[in-house]
Length: 250
Ligand code: IPE
Ligand code: IPE
Ligand code: MG
Image (cartoon, rainbow, N blue to C red; front, side, top):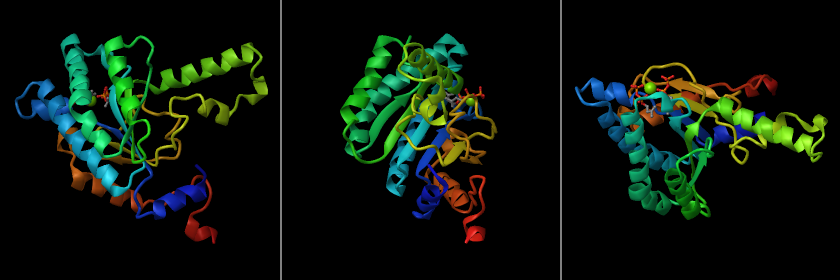
């Protein structure tokens, strides 16, 4: 998106067009209450329901949520298993309501090697909501930005090797068009909860000019008011994209 389109998006009530959220702190939320980490993940799903509805209500066009990273497989098998069960329950219980809200669901991340049952659920969600015209909910699942960029580079290499693409045609646009996010605008705002200030391999390419917002709240405590506070902070930012501020440029 170019600077003027972004400025236009900001002018729409200061609500970012694309919000990307690193939903962090489920485990710490639970531990601080003397509960097992799994309870934190369960509470995290409840927070997700609220944030999806509220984002759609505020006019967000695209909400990307980091739900499981390519590195999260390194957690204990029991926790990974629980997270997979939660995903399954989310699709079974929440998909109909999400569909009712006219939300379109799509996944980014590595599909190859995923258990067929899990991939089937995700594809079921995508198929059911494909024609919805409201907010797009992008689920980053088995997602790692370096993996995504490497897969895009491999596609380009295959096309060059087969003669379909000239080496000169390898550029920002052609690489971007082979990322999982090819059809999406770049995020305007990245939110990370639970006080950590890092990307943890999330959307490295796409956040080149995103604004960042870090909340001390653990994800299960992140509610509608917290999201509105993030939007208010975003609305006050001066996005220059390397050029001059809109005020100065006139
Ligand atoms: C985020 O919460 C959920 C996932 C990464 C799946 P965490 O499970 O990372 O919670 P903390 O960071 O350990 O508190
Ligand atoms: C990032 O959180 C991944 C998700 C929110 C799904 P992590 O909790 O896995 O990140 P690190 O390990 O603290 O960097
Ligand atoms: Mg964490």
